[in-house]
Image 1 (cartoon, helix red, strand yellow):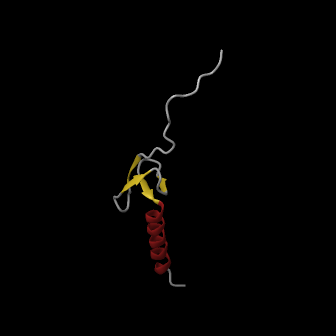
Image 2: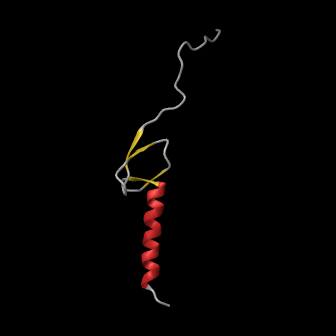
Amino acid sequence: MPKHNKSWVKSKVIVTLVGNCRYCSAEILNTDSFVSFYPKGHAHYKCMRKADEDKTYENESKFDW
């Protein structure tokens, strides 16, 4: 039995809403760079990195070697 050609065009890029950022509360799309946390929640990679650097800086400033 010969195969028939598809008569429809499948969209190549599908953009969906992932959720809101934990730090800046902006919407995150699946085309953005983001991280997901275990229990729930998502964050932009830049927001998480900035918060992580701030936390590291606070911990370093507490110790006065």
